[in-house]
Length: 149
Image (cartoon, rainbow, N blue to C red; front, side, top):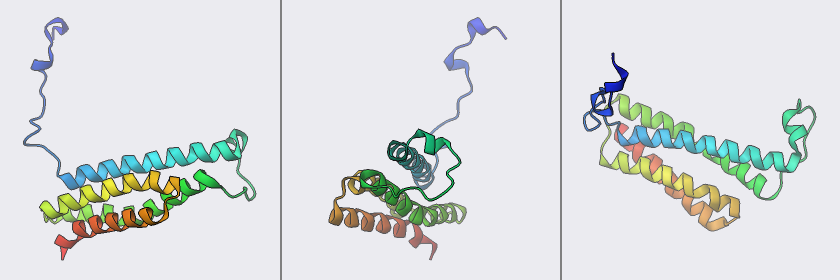
């Protein structure tokens, strides 16, 4: 093969219109990415409070509790993990059963965007808005789950 004559047009690229992933799967992937951002943000804030030596060390003993934004981001992550497992299971079951529809696609998007909004709202300590956004995410999750019944 002559590499000098190789161009992007000559590469065998998939037809994205035919091989597009279902919206629910794409939202699941975005939620995984959001979970990773949660973990990294929480780790950075935890390291800022407890120090690099603690973070790199054996972590024996009971550390001082996190406070302020670091504590709120940690609780937001725990809250995300409580619902994410159900969202992931619902999306995978929906796709395996081939029961996806416009409502489940919308529900998956609503779940993702609500969970994304939840992080800064919780970090900022806005109580009632936080609860409302959580409720919206649960509604999105239920929209994904509903076609399975």
